[in-house]
Amino acid sequence: MSQPTFYYFDGRGKGELIRLLLTYFEVKFTDIRINDINELPQNILDQLPFGQVPYYIDEKIQLSQSLAIQLYLANKFNFTGGDNNEEQKAISNSIVNVAPDVLDHLYKTLNLGASVDDFKNKIIPKFVGRLETLLTKNGGKFFVGTQLSYADLAIFNVVDNLLYFGFNDQLSTYTNLLSQHKSISSLPQLVSYLENRPKATF
Ligand SMILES: N[C@@H](CCC(=O)N[C@@H](CS)C(=O)NCC(=O)O)C(=O)O
Image 1 (cartoon, rainbow, N blue to C red):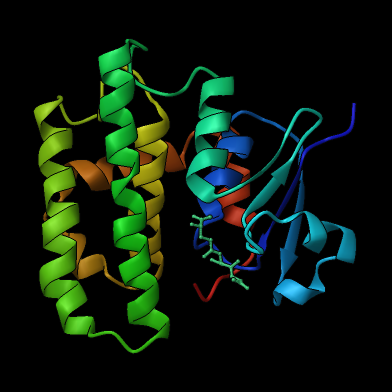
Image 2: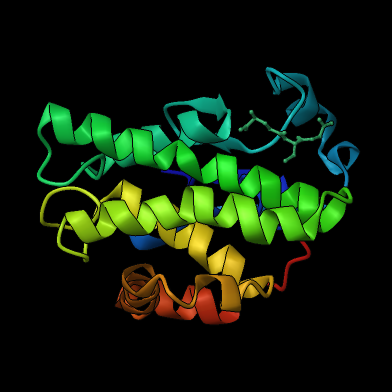
């Protein structure tokens, strides 16, 4: 059986959580990193439903749209939410959907000239501050239920991006998010990937 192939830019952006999910579940995958969409082979370009990456292929599916790929993998590995009841899955998914709200702002701030002050003083407290509150309400270790799930990895990736791109001071009071980041960073399935992944500019 051939291994899955994942196509995305050579950055984190909308692709990194998919790489993290595959890595956490110890799926060997071909990680194709491009710098321009036209670097993709013509047969792959022709397949892209919306002309965009991320794009994921395994033996059963060819899928675009980051949230759809993530949910496909989370479902496949029974990782969609907490203790896996429908309500927790729904809440987990709603938390996951906050990640692009923050990461899209981060991208605009780092690359498109959006205000760094707004990002620090408005966007981070608005979203990440509330994520800290939600995590704390559920006991401080997991966003839903009593075990690690998709939502935890999604928000780990948000915090990880913010730390990587230098917003440490703005996160310093979010102690549960920081301690969750530390414990997820040391999961044996992730350690080597996190230490060795390519540097990123977005
Ligand atoms: N809603 C899509 C957005 C995907 C997207 O914006 N992809 C960008 C890179 S982050 C892209 O492929 N840009 C190249 C292009 O549109 O030509 C998702 O979440 O996957």
